[in-house]
Amino acid sequence: MLKNVKNRMFTHAIVRQPALSMIKGITTADLGIPDINLAQQQYKDYVDALRSCGLEIIQLESDEEYPDSVFVEDTAVLTADMAIITNPKPESRKGEIREIESLLRDIHPNLSKINSPGTIEGGDVLQVEDRFYIGMSERTNASGADQFTEILEENSYQGIKTPMENLLHLKTGVSYLGENTIVLYGSLVDEPLFDSFNKIVIQKDEAYAANCIRVNDYVLMPKGYPKAQSIIEKAGFLTILLGMSEFRKLDGGLSCLSLRF
Ligand code: GLY
Image (cartoon, rainbow, N blue to C red; front, side):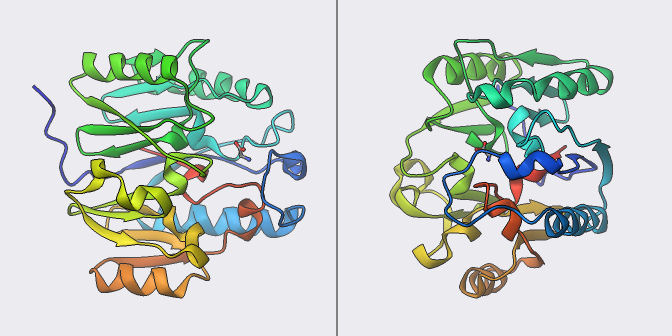
């Protein structure tokens, strides 16, 4: 029997300060090199927003060895009763899991790991109550998705492989806001797996806003996407807007900057 996980409330978030080396982070965006000072300010505003949603923050020091390590969401998937350490695909990101694993071993007794040749990144995992949609992206392979699903099933959750295209991660193009409402962009808009949801469709010129996060009473979304903001607010959600320009330069979305549980 699956778990009954409705109205999920978060109490904690793990974040990691941006490294100065983030200027060497992986990117396909042609938006220039991140401005470190602005990135640090945007990170601080993001952490303040999580606090204002009632979360206690566990902050890791920046790690210069890993330029992309601010995107802590990719390293694990957490629920109240389970932690899964992922296996990021890029060689430059694999070592990011070490410190997350030792932190989570202290706070989460029920911890599992994805092993090579399986790869999966947290950005490819969308939790909707007791179900986890797993994006079959360039970063997540069949072995990673199968291992992940096996662990989910041992914990009475369900894993659903989700086809996708032209996105870095699944959550680059889909966010779950609660109350059966889902934000979708691109090929995911017509993906039959999402047909039973109330859909909020993001237009191409505001594609970046498809990555947003529901944190308790608020939806945190990137600043500068007025059509997306208006449609989310009209659907009845309270929003907090955050500058994300410097993380966007590294293909990073708003969800990527924290692990919420
Ligand atoms: N820059 C984030 C990533 O490519 O994983």
